[in-house]
Structures are given as C-alpha cells and as structure tokens.
Picture 1 (spheres, rainbow, N blue to C red):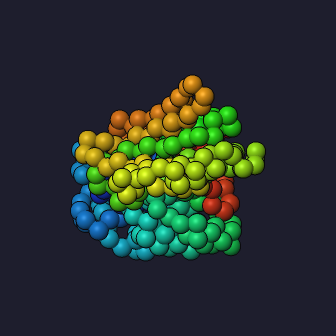
Picture 2 (cartoon, helix red, strand yellow):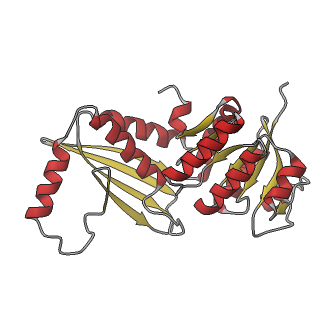
Picture 3 (cartoon, helix red, strand yellow):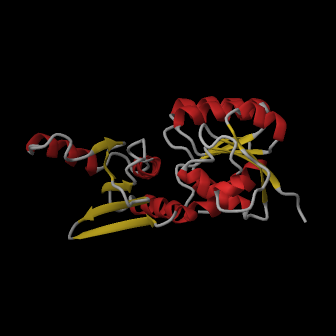
Amino acid sequence: MAEKIKVVITGAAGKMGREMTKGLLNSSKVEVVGAVDLVQVGTDIGILNGFPPVGVVIDNDLQGVLEQSRPQVLVDFTVARAALENAKQAILRGVRPVIGTTGLTGEDLEELHILCEERGIGAVVAPNFSLGAVLMMHFARQAARYFPHVEIIEIHHEQKLDAPSGTALKTAELMAEVIAEGGVTLQDKEAGRWCREKEEKVEGVRGGKYRGFHIHSVRLPGAVAHQEVIFGGQGQLLTIRHDTISREAFLPGLLLAIEKVLNLRGVVYGLDRLLDL
C-alpha cells in the first residue's frame, strides 16, 4: 500500500477549509499532519469537523507547523494576500502548494512560478476544484468558436470577498484564447457600437468587462457557487450552467491536484491543465 501524502491545510477553520479538511481526514490517500488558521487555535481538527480527536490542532504559526510536520503538500483556502505568503513559505521549504484561494494576480503567479522552478518543484493554483465547473469552462471555450457573443453571470454566497469570481475570470480567459485564434470578432465591434448608441440609465448595469466579455457578479445568502455562460446567436441562445450545491463537490478535484502536484514543476494554473480535455 502506497504511503499517504502528508498535507498541511491553511484556512482550516473557514467554511471551505473545514469542508476540505473533513474530506481529507476521510481519504485513504492523504494524511493531514498540520492545520493553520487565525481562529479556533488549539482546537483539534477532528473535533472541529465532528470526528473524534485526531491529534492535530489548529496553530497560527505556519512556519512552525511546516518545520515540525514536514509535509509534502500545502493546501490553501485563505485569502489572496495570505495565500501568496503561505505559498512562498512552503516553496522555500520544498513543500508543494495547492491553492484554492482566488484573487491572486498574474504577477503573484509569476513570482510563485519562478520560486518553484528554482527549487524544482510544482504548484497548482485552481480557481475552482469542482470537476463539473472545469467541464463547464471547457465546454464554454468550445462554444466560443461558434458563438462569439457571450456574457457570464456568476452567483456566490454573500461572504465571498472577491468579484468577479476566479472561475468567471478563468472562463473569460479561455474563451478569449480561442476567439483570438480566429482574429478580431464581431463581439468587440458590436459592444463598442452598443455603448455609443445606447444609454445606461443605471451606471454599471451592463456589469464589468474583462477580456471583451461582460461579467455580472451576484452575492446572495443561500448560494454556494453557480455560473451561467450565455451565448447569443441568430435566432437562438445557448446556456452552459454549473451549480455547486455543496462544497463537497470540490473534494475530488482537490485530491487529484494533491496527487498530481508531486510530479509537476512550476505553477500550473487551472484544474483543467491536469485533466485530459
């Protein structure tokens, strides 16, 4: 039987961190050897997640946890600023980051990539660990070849800090890549004409614009993570939608990333890069 992969999780007391910790504790492939957060310090992660004690308590000193537990992988579900620093601390100690935190910039990713290359290790940064969401983005990329007029509506819980979501931004990037292969599209021309000829009676009513696509962010209690990509064509609409009903949906993708990162070098952005799509 293969040895379990030793993992430290940061943001272990947050909603996502707790759900993922619960799943990792039940996994036959992973051993959680450390947990870090600024709250619930001293609490056993087993008890925190409704299990018997497992002998791992939440600490607020990541450096100390990494040096004492010597993990192979750091799983991060914090906030962007903390995730960057956490990943840098991990990489400097030869620990491979798997980051589910959104909001990292291109400059952040480049910094982490250089650090990983210097030490010959890999990292995974994924805006969304849901396999269904990855397929939704993949299908949207394919549809953009034929339907260049498209808008994104993403819906998340009211406590989500960043907007648009990382998934929405990644979707726009994927569609922009495939559209660019065909040259300039009608979408940009039509969008410009719309802005000149129409009047926005409420500022921002058309949502934000990224890579040529309008993105609308909704934040409501009761939501988890949802996204619609709506394509318009002559006499027809095509909607590709994914709904995350429970945070349990992220666990299979997270486990895949934890396994794959051990054999990577440099930063891999997006779970789709780990799948045969």
